Length: 113
Length: 116
Image (cartoon, rainbow over all chains, first blue to last red; front, side, top):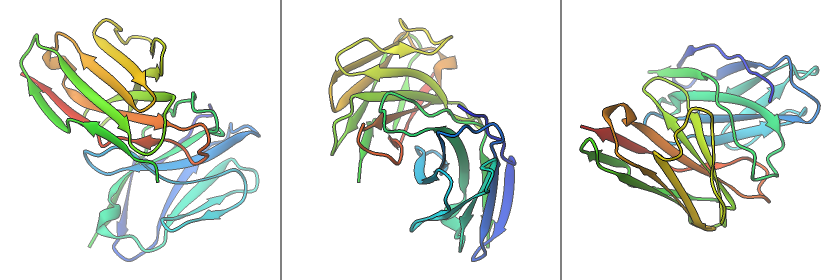
């Protein structure tokens, strides 16, 4: 699986958009970008994933650059409950249940009042 | 949506004893489950892949005789930490995959193990 690089930490003001970057310059054509987050002392939670088109769901938006070498997770209106570690993971499509997820260091997002 | 239940959420045990952690998929069948370990302020590290009806596959450096994994049914995998020592104190997390789901895996809420 391609390696990802994320800033170790970021701050965001409550109510503002949080933009979390991820570099994945070695991504291959069949690899998707997945985002998970882990709130303190809980298991990771799926947020969103995409291949090359931008994606949006009720939690967040995912913007993938045209060359697919980087992406940005956007939380449009961050709340205090969004404080967590956010993991960007690149891997082939998870339609094979036998493939695990490999976690990097992630970005520790602190949403401040 | 897919739900994975992990139990217990916290456990304290004495050094030398064994502890069993359960991971259940509540509304889907999981042919594969994964067990992770996470030390404070560190990322999740995969320990082993649990396959229903067969032996688990362990990552390099993980002692299979110490971390016993059983995946006897499509909805239950267990991790037993045998002869626990203080250095086994960690946050253990399971996740389950479903072959037809395309948005990733569902994780349990984790088990905080403290060995005293």
